[in-house]
Amino acid sequence: MIMQGKKGLIMGLANKFSIAYGIAESLNRQGAGLLFTTQTEYFRNKISDIAADFGCTDVTLCDVAIDGQIEVAFDEILTKVGPIDFVAHSIAFSDKNELTGKYCNTSRANFLNAMNISCYSFTEVCRHAAKLMPNGGSIVTLTYYGSEKVVPNYNVMALAKSALETSVRYLANDLGPGGIRVNAISAGPIKTLAASGVGEFSKILEYDRQRSPMKRNVTQKDIGDACTFLLSDLASGITGEIVHVDCGTNIIGTHF
Image (cartoon, rainbow, N blue to C red; front, side, top):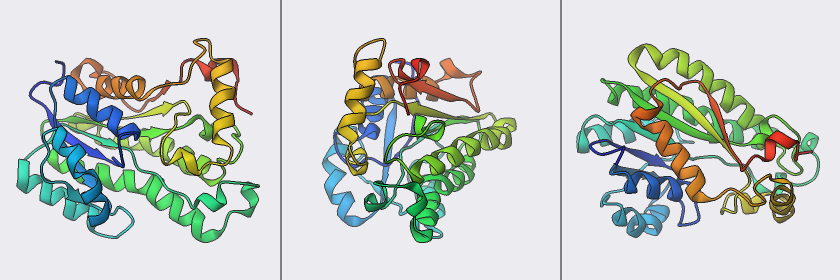
């Protein structure tokens, strides 16, 4: 029960196949109190039963693409529960029609939108979360190895994740004096609603599985448990890191 007595926020839960769900399960098993945000009223209705299973009866609305909503959401959370100990940020987006073919065909509009939602939102989340962590805390986001190597059809998301990883390092430096740690998990390919938008994703899954030293793909539990560790006091000396959780696929060059 390494999270007993701690409470925090999970952003990006979409359904039971989400990486955020695996994180919630792991944190719940370790005794954490959980809060959730979601983008719209439609999604709030969709995940309210899941959130209730984790003891959260009031999901907070927060569309990170809209100016001011992140600040409003964190103010609302402060009013509801007071200070928090951690945040897990599992939010990213690109028009799925631009996750096929060549990266050079990315539109300006989708480039800016992908960067805003997938990268800048984390910066703003950290800024407002820090106000709710007067005694320190831990913040984790999710990235992918496509930030370092060319992965077919990942396209603009690769640049967004690369920018996100650099943000993690700068945010760790900014927030460190306040006792707040900032890290990212680079998860191997995993079948989620978001991943289904990447062209030929099933081939990427099989390619990684065959070449993994463990001969399997990463699971929700693998990622959730790693995230729980980073959010816990057991990781008190770890900040500004990109932690790979991918069954060893990146150590043998499985990506293109």
